[in-house]
Image 1 (tube, one colour):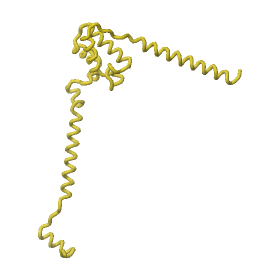
Image 2 (cartoon, helix red, strand yellow):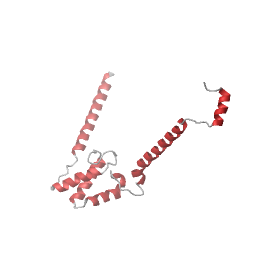
Image 3 (cartoon, rainbow, N blue to C red):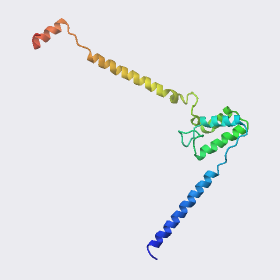
Image 4 (spheres, rainbow, N blue to C red):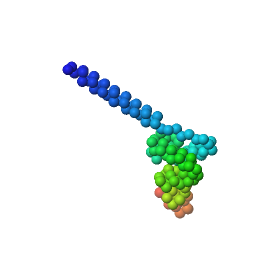
Length: 163
């Protein structure tokens, strides 16, 4: 057996495994069932809701924009609740109970989310106070020093009279 034959078989095996993997991936993507609505109002509610909910995998995308499997599951969950006649608030409450406030792009203001809502403003105020303090300190240092008559006489004796 020549040295190129094992490489040939290895290459063919690798190509076969790669093509099987890619085919399996296409089938997994094609397996997602499209969500069909018979009522335009329900479809609008669905689109609004999935735009308000954060993908827990992607974190910077809504479940409407994400392709993660969890986002697909959450879209299906919201779809099922809307078809079952649940209100938007009931769907949100269910998802918050299951995943916490993190699933919401706009979590409610409460003790748990206080810092999330107000820390940026507090930091800006502290930075402004710090900047104002530095400016005042520098302006005090830059002020011209005025001497009283006694101090001016002593200075003149040390360096000589003004010419």
